[in-house]
Length: 265
Image (cartoon, rainbow, N blue to C red):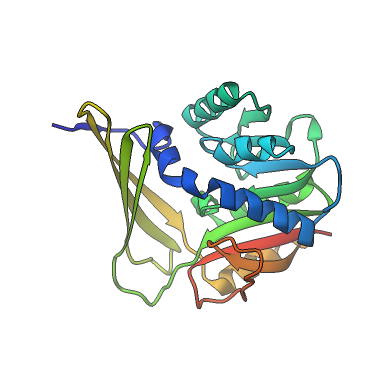
């Protein structure tokens, strides 16, 4: 019988890390391309901040590319996983526990690039929290620095439950992740999301996890309105979750996964 764990995937970040790690190299290359194209490219010393850094996969990758790297997360288990990863690879980064809406960078460091991908931003429950996060990111950037922000938009007209499935493997551990999203409550701007993970280890061990969240929802117009509330940042480009630097998009509701490139004036 599989072991059912009554914890979130952030409290046991190995399986989360296996599922999303295959995108790390492409995401890191995309971030560097955005820095060169829209930010302070050409600098010999480059500093990057990851907002909600999770398991540290991008922290480690950016450090390996020569960036002076920092990141924070609210969950101590994911931070421990990230620190263990850095110890194993020998890369260096500044990591600390903090929250997106009120984080404070140690020693008031400033960065050329900040990023928060895969819709983590939607954990912020209110407009005030979202704007506060954006303002704090802006304050942590050098003038001309950029914030690359990924958000999954909500189709308020869709009455159906939607489903996504990922399968990944590392060191003989196979992970299957199924995520279900219920129709949004447009008035409250919330949507229920459930993720179920099944992990099969060598030797027959099987683990199951279930995590349920409530996300804040966004349409393209709501994203634009939010960004207008932070005059320190200007939208300079928009892409999608394919992270192709050569494939720009308009910020509209014709696709779900938007990546904003916001530059500090």
